[in-house]
Image 1 (cartoon, rainbow over the protein chains, first blue to last red):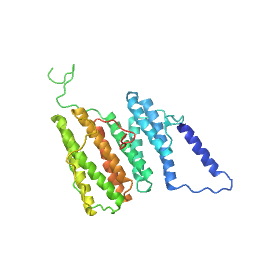
Image 2: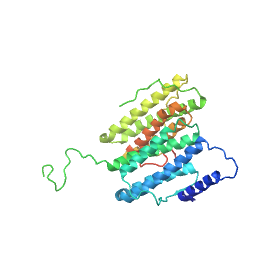
Image 3: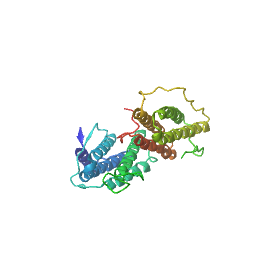
Image 4: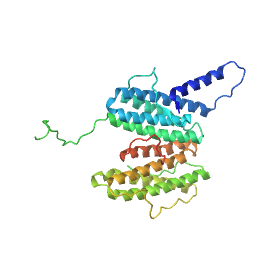
Length: 165
Length: 150
């Protein structure tokens, strides 16, 4: 098992090694490698935002943890690791509202859709398809959390002066 | 609201794509049968939504049958009967069957999504996205990887 932080550190170390003046020429990364890296970065940011959301929205803690864990599962698709452990970034936001989470999820969905025509890699397309479906559910679910329940016109409330008590 | 089949989008006659189109028609045939079956277990007050989903699957089946015909292919015919994945005998198990069907269809649509030409991918992905919301309407919880069968 590898933590997200270790993953970031090791990928940074690899990048530094590639940039060192060794005289060895490294191959340019393919579009698919760049795209995968971008997905890892974006998914890590979403996980961080969920940590902040869980801090702020205590009454939805259980549901938000579930959605955050979905993003950790998505992360494993890109990193090909078996699991990813939740580690909040120490420099990230400390609190975030549900509305912020919805906006971030919508942005991620748009990013997914904007890339479906740019690659023919079937594994990447499979990942994007499943992740888009999952994010679509997240957006719907989060919107339900902040949408007041519509009561029928004839609803009566105990102890209130509504209706003919 | 119903979708009317549109013959406008063109798909290239690639054998792999034809196989996936056949899978979709077979999946939608099964969905139509399953929704027809499970409707009888849903009380009148809750029936409207499930009935509208039945119509959606019938329209989607017709749309993909038309796509196959446009490729000079004969679409697969529906079976007379299908094996249920589990026993359905009340509204709870009826909704579970609806969830099973919608989730399976996501997987089937994504099989076509990843092999079809780039210009047609968004249209196919939209079918999976709409199924993912119907999963929630049938009381399922969000999933990490909709369309996976395990």
